[in-house]
Every structure is written in structure tokens, then in C-alpha cells.
Image (tube, rainbow, N blue to C red; front, side):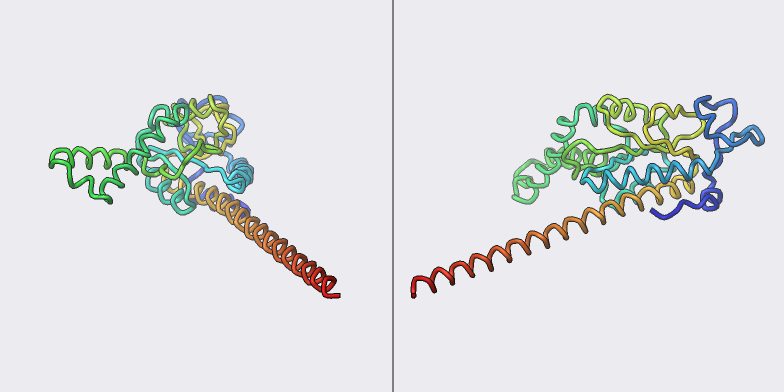
Length: 263
């Protein structure tokens, strides 16, 4: 991935932490100083952590596993939906469905319910229902789409979780910990970084800061996806070459056998 520029992080306000009285002492290694009662995050450490997390996320994407983005706070929802959508990764921006990871089978059933309703509309079954029943089905479909539509393509547990604000998304964090799913997160000065596998110390309240961090992260994931695509194309080409060579060899052997018989 491209080198993370500290100047860009500074301009995006990534360095602004919380009030000193609200801080978590475990964030001490990432705090540079205190100014006007607010902790200032060390951006050089943030840059290093972004690069470390980016490299790990790129490998996960290259392996073909999905990375689930989680951000339900107002200032992050639209940004996460846009950035994750660009790289075709699942995301949760509404309320976290309890058991999303630990009871994934049930969540998949709900997703399949959406597909079932869509089939009903296509094959005409929907039109045979009464007006009241159609209204109920439409409401159920809209509710499912709002809460789970963004994860409809996630057919198995994700390879990693990326979280904005671990205090707010504590349920998602606990579920991922139970299943040993790697957790990547923006961690502000009021949070405990020990809950996260890959900590990115950053302001998780400002939209500019969230946008900047996610830009770096999704770029790394995109690079991993492109590498995977290139490797697959190279493998396909090698397979085609083997098939072609085998066919030529087989043809040559057939000609030789025919020539021997004629003699």
C-alpha cells in the first residue's frame, strides 16, 4: 500500500482524542500530549499501525475471505457503506443483530427469507396473496433489507472484522472474540485497545478522520483483491497451457501409432 502521510492524518483531525478525564489508561502508549484538556494522539504511531493493519487486511482479502465492516454511529454509517460497497465487502451500519456471528446459521436463514420473497414476486405467487398479506410481506422484506441486505453475499463467517468505535460496537467485539475472528479497529483514547488485534489509534468521532482511515484501509483490501485476481488469471493461463500441451502430445502419439500401423 502507499505510504501513509502524517500530514494527511493531521489535516483530517485524526489526532484529536477525548477529554483527559474520559481516557482509558491503556491508550497511554498512543497518546502524544495533552492540550486544553484533550489528549492528542501520536500520528506517527497511527501511521505505522495503519500500514501494519493494511498489510494484514490485504492478505486476508487475497485469501478470498470477506472482511465485515461495522459502524452504527451516525457520522460513520454513510462513509462505511460507501467505502465497503466500493470493494464489495459486507457491512453493518444499522443495529448490530445479536448473534450475527455466534448464531450465523440463523442469520443466514433470515437472508434466505429475503431471497424467498424475491422469488415469490418473480414467479407470481406474491400476487395470489391478499392485500393485507402482501403488505405484511413487503414490510418484512424492507426490514430484512435494512438490517441484513448489506451482508446478503456473506455465505460464511468473515475472515476479519473492521470496527469504528469499539465501545459502541462492544457486542460485535465480544462475538468476534468468542470465534477468534481477527479484529481491526479505529480506537479512540476513551477505549481499551487490548480488545483489538490490530489497533489503529485515531479519532473515531469526526467524519473526516473516519473517511481518511477507511480510505487507506479499503485501498489495502483492494490491492489484495487485485493480487488474487491476477494470481487466478495466471493459474487459469497455466492450466490452459497444460491442456493445450497435453492435446498436442496426444495428437502426436496418435499420428505415430497410425504411421506405424501403415508400415
